[in-house]
Length: 107
Length: 114
Image (cartoon, rainbow over all chains, first blue to last red; front, side):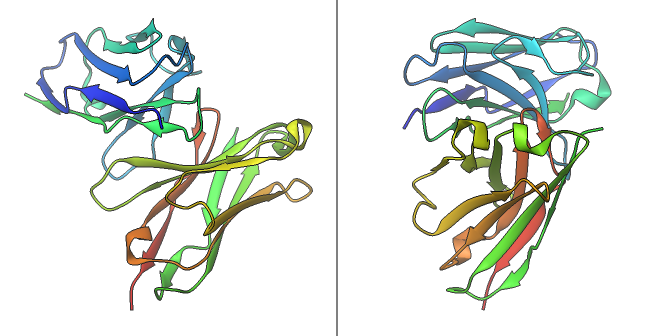
């Protein structure tokens, strides 16, 4: 199975900060990667598909980049509603696998 | 508006079976693969499996943790995907979500306990 390792596991930041979350795959997954946001008590929500494509309705402060085995999710200027847990998901190979999550908290 | 609604969760004893439903609306259900994902209390997301559209053969794939116990099927005429869960264990206690390319349902809670 492909292992997806996210870092950091948790992160404290302030409104207005720029933050970056990294996801590393144990093997080349080309561009078969998405990012998901989960607010407390809520269902996950799709943010980014195919590494850098923004899902409809997702603010442009979210962006994704990377290829192969290393990928990043960047939030350019944190807003209060962005404090949540973020997951990457690879869909290059079965079984699909999520990263363990990055909890973004208010400093 | 795309909507996915899970149903069928509840309290079930270990070893018993349960069937979850995922009802889609606001899109052509038959055109899309549907995945199932779960989240145990306080834990991260776990991909369970999916079913392709009939255009791509309607084939299924599963995570090792549920292969042989869980089965995914679909009824495109009703716009529903199913997750059939057999031989349930206490470790299967989780919120179960269905998803379709960026869209998620609200989840349904399954509690496996005697």
